[in-house]
Length: 293
Image (cartoon, rainbow, N blue to C red):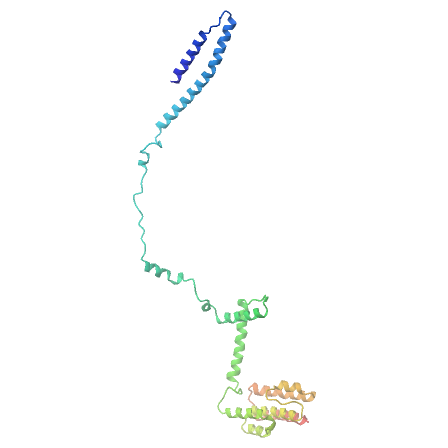
């Protein structure tokens, strides 16, 4: 079709040139008319050529598209796509079994932390809290090694206390056979020291061969004489160390401290004395008592 239009246009232009009314007497004028005709036809020829090229490209594209094996506009294109014909079956366990499964210990994330803390850790935690209240900026923390050391010394202290409580027969809250009356008598003498005849109690202890009790009465006799002479002020709750600090006389204070060491050694050390040992200690106490004036 485009070729036919091109030929018709070309013939039409030639006919226009042949119908020109101007005379063509001169040769130069004839060439001018021909050049004008050619110039006017050139754009038409170019446009016709472009049209032919585009038409040729379209025809090639259409041919390639028509010859394609997988044309997108083919209505039967998707008929060859394989379909998934099997459906997955989801099987769910019964609800009670699911509940039991998640109630096992593996899924229990909450627990009582007190059941996991030892007694030692609780004690250290209390001590740490107490120190934190006193010193809010306390940088010291109780690690595991400190806990072991603390437990070691705590066991030693506990063993010492148990030893004193269970095996010290001279403690008031431990009543051994035949000693209850003796301790009651001793407690009465100590409460009424300033009005007691200690020599009589000393003789009774020697007759019973209770030499440790005799040493204790000798120590009470020292305190009685010091109080009667004004070197100390008697009070039942005072200790031997407090009495020693009240004595102003150096000789009397040193002698009282020496007698106190003997008393502690015999009474609290639970050393068994015989008659000879008691006689030697009694002489030392009597010599000191003779110095008290």
